[in-house]
Image (cartoon, rainbow, N blue to C red; front, side, top):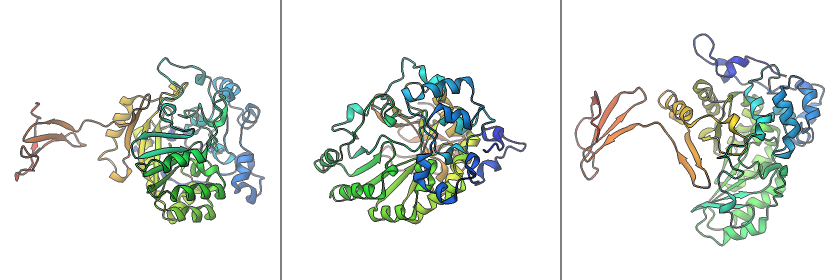
Length: 412
């Protein structure tokens, strides 16, 4: 097991305020499985077969479970299954109750508490589902759910009602009906495969599904949403990458929340996808105890770029039932974004969004940089708090007048 610089990785900067440890690429190691043969350890099917799925396994591997964790683990399979790959389990620091990986993966008794405003379907997907397994919420794109299984189960999962079938949702995708709906709606140009995790399908099943979608003339753009490169980098084989390469334009959105997740194994797996010409983006969730510190988040985003991944979204944690203990505030999210914009390369700055409760779609949330505007100018502030005016004519044409820094904005 790893137990390295745990206070630093929680967001407590060392002397000088830098975070060199967070930007280093390290192997996850073998930990408890040090005697496992290389061929087995590097086989993604072996990893899936040997996942930690019971409280008994968890107690044996992590005797430092807190009372809250032990109680949560005993009840986990009634809401969202317990499941952690051996590879990813090795990133948990058993000596640190505030380990960011631990908070994401180990069930807690707090999951059984539901606030009045929390929901089982916070994004309103079921109400936008014309056929089972398909969500058509935006005009030109659909969400295509291919499975209810994941390699590991995040405790804040938006689709915890569906994935793992712990709550009896009994999800069964119907590919023929899903594809028929897409084929019958020419306005659909973008299809996002998600679930569960699409990369748990075999190469053959995934290839067949992508081929059927690519055969629809009006489908221009295919996407895969996956956490497999983070949970199970062994799955990103050269054969998988060669198969995916056939279906360009194909984008892959990964899900990483903390720099510790970006190991040498993950970096190499992402490199194989990038070498296949697949653009990569990351979707993170803002989480208490994990990444609600601006320095930790900045280190994470910069490390993603080193893995050839563009930070795409930071999501406000959805109002999924039992997630209050992991939910950072919107105020924290806005403050975090303010500490990113202008303080690191623009490529490292994602869009912070709230998925409007009940099915309203993604709403971008950002600090206020436009202070006022009227018919002939816009007053703005920069990342340093300095104020500027941008003059323009009533018809929106910029005036030939040098912009200047001003003391205070004229409020309108």
